[in-house]
Every structure is written in structure tokens, then in C-alpha cells.
Picture 1 (cartoon, one colour):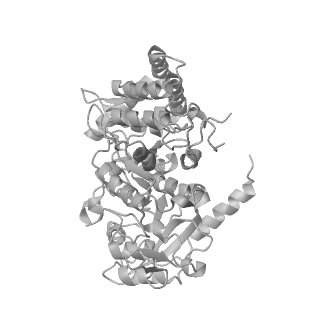
Picture 2: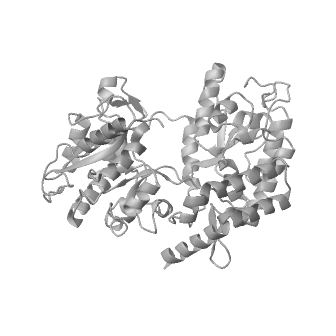
Picture 3: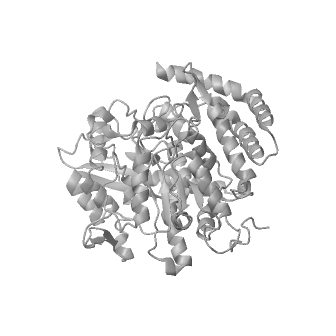
Length: 514
């Protein structure tokens, strides 16, 4: 049965194949070797001729730039660095990355998708340069966000330059037209948020005369609850207790307060009752179909939902239907859960970049890529060829697929540190508001002090430990267990390895604090 209350939302790879893939990648990574393939192994740098680097990047298009690309030629002219991109399809990048690590034949630069165990082990074994002492020497790189640097670090060391994404991306997206129809103001406190959800559920906000809306749409993704928990003052995964020791969020009183709040929403039917099995991919479509009035998720969902509604109801085109709030005030003021703040990082393999002098040349190049002219070149392309500007200075992208093939995916080289400076397409009212709120949110995000710590206990038992808490919080919210039942689940978590996990994390934390 639909939960939407009558709203219209109703071993298999052969060894031969593996060997062929490995051979192809090793060939690619070692292709066209020159004396400068180790990031100017000849010592040539930006001030003494052209430096050549190979750069392993994820590709997101069928047609990708090669050495003949006018964009890459302009890049060389501007930086005196000749980049040879090694394109890997984005869908198989993780596998190819691991194969490259195993082969030991690495390019001068490469994108690391995430802090996987293979990357962590390679970094610890000395495969990549530790960049921690160098970033302060470069005008853009030294402005890297300390929270994001903490998030990407391993054992307190920074092995890459992160590719920046909005840190303050989470918040509340809600139906502005519903709020206006009911004569309400945007929520500023947790109580305001509750009253908005109550009105969106009980007061026919869409004016169709039916009792068929929910105040808040939730899914099986835990992010909504984690965001709400920070409003109540709970830490981001881990926090410090009064003695300075690390404690997991679910052991705090603030986390329990958040669970009680969401349980109240469930009991009063202000959220969809089947949230625990709803696919997060359906969230935006469900909102666009009018089943609920708000979500607590990434703020840029707001713009996409609005555009989906315009498609469903063209008569509402150009009406501002959605709005966003970064956070609502709780017992400890305004707090919010940050994202990781990055989408992979760019690392420098020691096997190609062999000397400190070579490393500094490479870092000077990467620093330069954060300048406005380089961001525009690699993100937007060449004016008059890949884009034009309208009367307001917004980008109109070329529709010539062959021409755009000269630019496709070169933005994967960009880091956007300290901020994005590329040219933008026409901005709707909703998109402008989202960008403003994301920036404001960065001032109130709660960092995770344990982000650099790599736990062997969690590597072995993490899935089991997470399942215990995830199951318990869902059962508590839907009323299958009471607070005592949740405490019993916490005790099971402790006995199943949780106490060992806490001890190990605190031992690791003490080491990096020294």
C-alpha cells in the first residue's frame, strides 16, 4: 500500500579480463614517458621551461580531451605545465585506482576518490607525499578549510589536496507556497520547525481539501536524524566529554533528545510512517508530487524540487515555490551537521615526483589552478568557443558536442580552494538562496574530531556495530522499544566491540593530540 495518503505518488569476472584491464592501465600510466614524467624529473619548473605531468582523472563523458585540446594548450601557455590526462571512466575509477596502486606504476598526479583502506595503506607505506608541512607556502592552498583538512587526514597527516564541496550543504528545504498560504513565518527554532510540520500535515497547505500531506518526508538514510541531532547539541559522530575523551554521539543525552523529538513527529503522523524503507532517491520526486512539505537533507535539493514542480505544473513556472533554512536554534544555539566538505583529493605519488624540488613545482602548479582564470578555463572553457555570456554575465554553454569534447571533465582537476571562482549559469532565486545559506552554514557546522583516526576495531566490526544502533533508533522512533530498550541496545553495542572501539579511538586521539 502506498504511504502517500491518496496523493498521486504511487564470481563472475574472468582472470583473463582482469589481466587485460591491468595491462591496459599500466600501459596508460606509463605511456609517453619523458625525462619530465616524474613531474619534471629534469628539474624543469614553471620558471624554467615547460614541466610535463601525467594526471589520472575520472572521465564523465564519452568524448574526452586529448593533447590537441585548445583548453589544455591554453593551460600550458598560462602555467608552463603540459598536462597529459590519463582518463579512466568514472564508473570504474575505484577499480582502476586500486589496480594502479597494485602495479606500482603511478602518474605524477592522481585523483583519490575517498579514504579507502587501499589508499590509507598506500599512504602509510610512503606511496604519496605528506603535504602537511608544505601547504602553508602557497597563497591559495594555505587557505584550505581546517575542518576539511582534518576530514581528509590520515593519522593527523594530509596526503592530498581536497576537491572542495560545500561544507554547509545540509539544512531544511520547504514549500514556500505552503508556508505563505498558511500565513506562517520561516522556522527559527526547533519549536518553530515542529509547528510548521504540524501545520503542513493538518491544515491543508496545498488547498485541495484533502488530508493527504505530511510535514516532513524522511527516508531510510540516517542523515536527516543526524542533522536534527546536531540541532539538539549532539556531536558529529564523535565528540569530547567533560574530561576531553572521545565519546560516540549515540551515548550522549543530546542524541537521545533528538530521538525523542523524531519519535514525537512519528507518533503525531507528521512524517511518513514507512520512512525506514523509503529509497532516498525518491525523496525529491515525492516532494515534487506534493506528498510532503519539507525535507532535512542537502539544500540544493530545493532547486531541483522546484524545477520538477514546474515541469509537473507549468502554470507555476517562475513562481518561487521553495525556500531553505540552514538550521534552527536548539538548546545550545545554532548548530549544523557538515558534509565531509570534499569529493576526493589530488595526491602526489613519490614514484614519479621523486624530489622535494619536483614536489614544490607540482604544488605551485596546483596552487595556480585555484586562481580565477584557471578555474574559468578548466570549468567553463574558452569564451566564444565553449561558452558565451548573456547581458548579466551568466554563462550560455555551447551545444556543439564536438567542441565541448575539448573541455569535458577537465574540471576534475579543480580544487576550488579557498572557493569557487568559475562563471555560473543563470541563477534562479532558489539557487541564489541556497548558495547564500550554504556559506552561512559554514560558520555553525560541528566538526568531527575523530575524522583523521583509522580504527582497526571498526574495520573488523563496524558493520555489526552500526547495525545495532541503526536498528535500535528506528525501533525507538516507531515505538517498538522504549528508552530502556534503546539503552539495552547500547549495552549490546558496547559488549559487541563498542567499548574496544571507544578505547582504540581514544588511544589514537591521544597520539595525534601530542
